[in-house]
Length: 330
Image 1 (tube, rainbow, N blue to C red):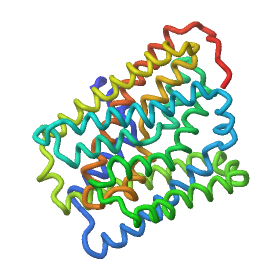
Image 2 (image 1 turned 180 degrees about the vertical axis):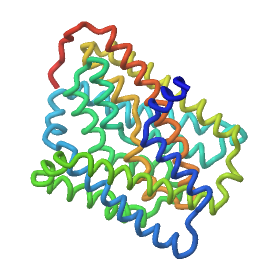
Image 3 (image 1 turned 90 degrees about the vertical axis):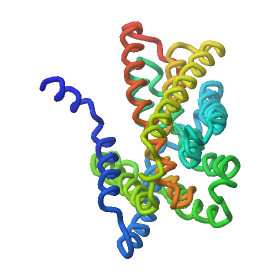
């Protein structure tokens, strides 16, 4: 009984809510007029999410990141070059192991920016350069608003039907709210910080709504009759291999480039993450509606694996660190 309580205490409520949204969508998918209303609600939710991202991300700190171009340039290179190359390698797996839409989902997750909150939190636990992690994660997300759609167009465009209409949707649903948030950040950021709990609930609620919408559409299109348990297990295995490869590469690069320990932690934690909070809303804009439910499954799986693995790594690194490690300036 105590073991069960301990296990439940370690479950991320956000992940539990996302899984709940998948279950509800599987049992009660939106159809007809309800699906039409849900579609409009998702458009508003995605716009709200990227407006909040714009308000939250510190532009000044991201610009100042150019001063430490080696560290932050390496994080960006891992996020938007190394990871996509690994994602392309997953496309070589036969369809009998991983169906096409799930394979495309693996590639899609490799094109996303890093997380913000977990990257910073794990860097802190590992006694790394927290200020550097704030800048690296923020810079990654700023760049991702532009780079992720470009990479999707180049690497997935032909397979997911990326078109001129997609570019218009990116401008209206992603870039416009994000830029508006950046422009209004000076006045709104203090309010957002004071009401962090409220804004966190609304943006997480928006992501949950998007997940319900994606899987609702997927259920109507027969997602659970197409995806087998074996395919899900295969995706889990590929996600583990992806994360292991990136952790190994970032560890190697940190030593190869002679970064201080605190900065090696930043590269390890920020370079190995992919953002679920940004990825699912982006999927609704960049990917075809009929395939979203399939294609975000690998992202949801990878997200949980990265949290579990990096939490263990960060704790061990923190325990092994000196009591007062020298923190490199960002």
